[in-house]
Image (cartoon, rainbow, N blue to C red; front, side):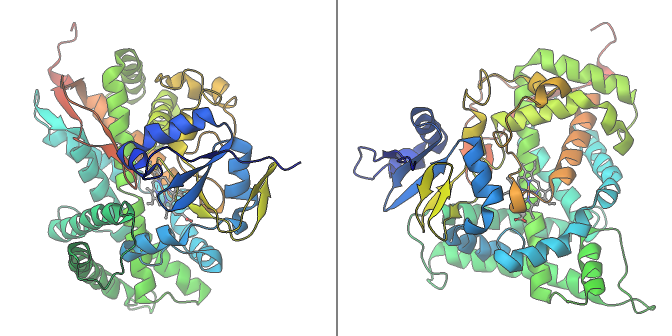
Length: 459
Ligand code: HEM
């Protein structure tokens, strides 16, 4: 029997537009608590369907994903920055791109990045002054930017600091412009000479010329007629196409590389910032984490082999990503035809929202959802978490390709920080989530750092 999907009209003239724009997290969560499983709501001129029941989420993202591609409006806006890389391609084009990118993310390859991650994290903590106040969000943005630059392009921050910064800053500004674009209710054409379009064109020029220079050099075959494998992600993209004989154009390469940069930098940085926020508020968890890290590392820089012995570090990060998932809402999906999910009929052309933030905060999925409790992710407890209720990396054919990379990076950076410093939240700062494409902290996160080498043993 087909069940009716409840609809929330909202009582304002703007059809929920102002509630959504002002406080999307509270607005969506409030409705999800009122209408379990699935509901529709008016958002300005359109009607959105929001899915919160894990079995239904699975149908949209996994088993019936072909009928629910990404919504073209999102893809178009993101494409103005990312081109047609992995995040913004659809159907067969996406399948081809995913296949070509996969070798770059094989575990063997990812493991080879562990030392880069640890060394860059060590360089970062070495610049901190004892007893100083640092902005954790800025530090995390910088270190993840350097790591992604090195692992994608083999561009060293010391050797080519200008190039790395030029690319990183242009990407960062383009991301901000894309956020602005996404939150504009009317989709204005790209050719209109409005400030947003002018700025985006300028930043793209800077970015594209820097990336073009790198790609042109790297596409040149070496003396043996083959493309050199420099151990980075770009090498893997170039080599995988060599084997396959289906060459990516320079534009396609640019789009892939910018996509990896765009998707793999701010996401991890936010995950780490929110983790530090949670630790700042939970001294017991911090003490237990510190004990694990000290015990396992005994003063050494962490390496890949250590990760298996740092289960609590992983539990802490997973729980922080539950409370504050970097990708708080997945890209909207779109129904290509009338489709049943569970007992509900989704009409063709419906726009569908699935928000990890909402899934992670429903009490039917997580007991006391507002409480930070890493024990939820212990070996015994994790298997009790309902499938598709915890989705920091998405699911199905569009699941994050960088998940293993990100989790390794986050654990190595966190372990390096906690091993070297004590952290104390600066009092009276306002912590407001800023849910744009990714969810950061509006005013950043300030913490006072105390070098642990300076802390007397009896303290
Ligand atoms: C904590 C860090 C990260 C989080 C929380 C995260 C989250 C996600 C999520 C939720 C998606 C799916 C979006 C959707 O279905 O609409 C996604 C896709 C993607 N992520 Fe990540 N990500 C992270 C790090 C990374 C890293 C480090 C890279 C690359 C170096 C990366 C590259 C990608 C790409 C290319 C896609 C698109 C995959 C496809 O559509 O086939 N991500 N990510």
